[in-house]
Amino acid sequence: MGGRTNAAADDDDYVDIDDTGPEGLKGADGGYAWEEEYKRSWDAIQEDASGSIQSSVLGISDQRKRRRQRQQHDMSLVQRGIMRHVMLVLDESEAMSVRDLAPTRIHAAQALLARFVSEFFDQNPISQLSVVATKDGLAERLTELSSNPADHVRALQAKSNRDLAGEPSLQNALELSMHALKRAPGHGLREIICVVGSLTTCDPGDIEQTLQALRHSGIRVSMVHLAAEVHVFRRICHETRGTFAVAVDADDMQDALFECIPPPCVPATKATSDMVRMGFPVKAQGDAPTACVCHHELSYTGFVCPRCRSKVCSLPTDCDVCGLALVAAPHLARSYRHLFPEPNFVEKPSGGVVCAGCGAAGEGSSKAAFECPRCECGFCLECDIFIHETLHNCSGCI
Image (cartoon, rainbow, N blue to C red; front, side, top):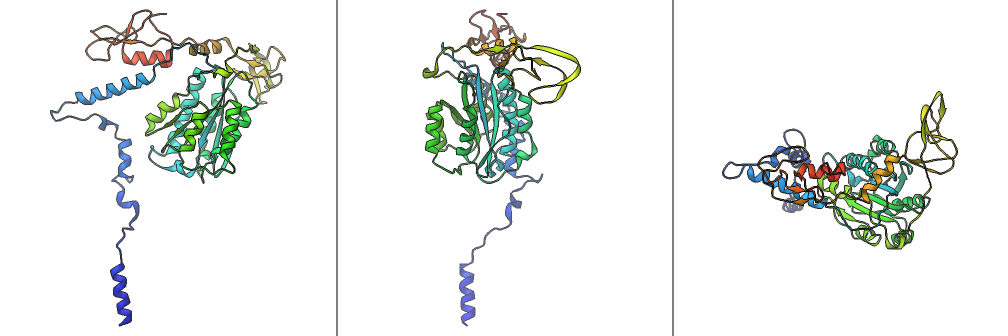
């Protein structure tokens, strides 16, 4: 009787738990049902009650306009640093394996950072960048400070970087980056840009001391978080005059990350004029291959340093022998675009005006609705974004 009574009591306390696992949440294609929203892009355009798609099209147009408003340039006369030394920190912890970004956070971040590196050097040709990865409580430098985007992209896309483990260490990543930036020239800006997906950080010491060291060194820290706002992360960015953003999707992550591409304003405590010695090497080609001083590889062509006559593979860079900054004239010309940016276009009623960029005309609010204040030429929304983000010159003015 006692055994049966205990069995009956056990039956009363029994709770039926669905332990079938995540198999019941999967769709017909084998993936989770909530993942399909990232693949069905055509669902963005839907019919309303009357069967019209005009409301969806207008919604997409409004999103483009809001994106353009976020890209408005600051036309105030401030000093900007066109020579930047940036440490790019990537979180490679287990938190980056979450699939809220297709296909995972780490894949989406690596693909976007590869585009970021290419765009960064396109708009900051005389700057330098280095890639740092943090996982398992440690930080590792993947590339040295250089102006070669191919090396950084290759390091970001390496398969070994997708082996996620443990938790990140923000303090170790900042300490490693700060140690590398201390060797950078004093006339350039020193920045750290972090892409983090973890809500925790495994630090060996007091991060307040690291924050004080960052402020004392004048290093600017910016961060894009892929999950939520963390107080210590936001505080570090705020006290170092950086920016902090939380990305809710891939487009939001791109907007937040690409806002770090234009050079920031120089702090008032550092707003001084310094003479920087630069060399303009001449491209040379020899009959026999010679070794370069940057990669120690044999090649027939290269650029000869005007001071020590050493050969380097590409420009811009610093000579490894004499330390002279080697650039080309187009690099300086492309850097000046931030000192003299293209003025913001004024929004005007379209009125059927032909776009001076692509020649499009017709009905619609996006046709020739933006006017250059200097040449008074009208441009459509797409050409306006292209001029300010890519061309950096008004086609009507030139």
